Image: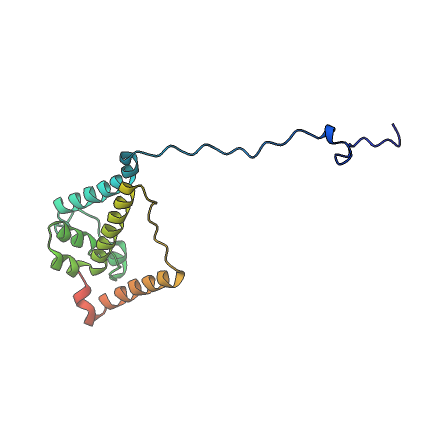
Length: 165
């Protein structure tokens, strides 16, 4: 056995080639989902939001004892970006946009952004398109954070009392 080459040189002996390697296994394509299955997820998100607004619309946050007080407001006296959000949602659920904006303008803006996103998601799901994604460059996210910070600072100053709930 010494001195013998145990490896076969495939270029010299074509009849001793190893069997061809099958191509990588590819899973069969998934069957197309029905329209009802495509709409199930966005419809459940929408149902959750509608249920939350229905609850807040029914149980008035202006009456004490129904909801907890904001911990930041209780501990520091500073209004956070969400302070007045429940009163805003209550007014929004009753169709009173002026009162809703007066309670928390940032929250009402968020309601409209959420509604637009949900409409886009439902239309795409109905047509069989991809799920919409919110892809913003980092400076836009920093800008939104800065806007929320300015909102908090202004609503806590005397000249910004119009933004306080």
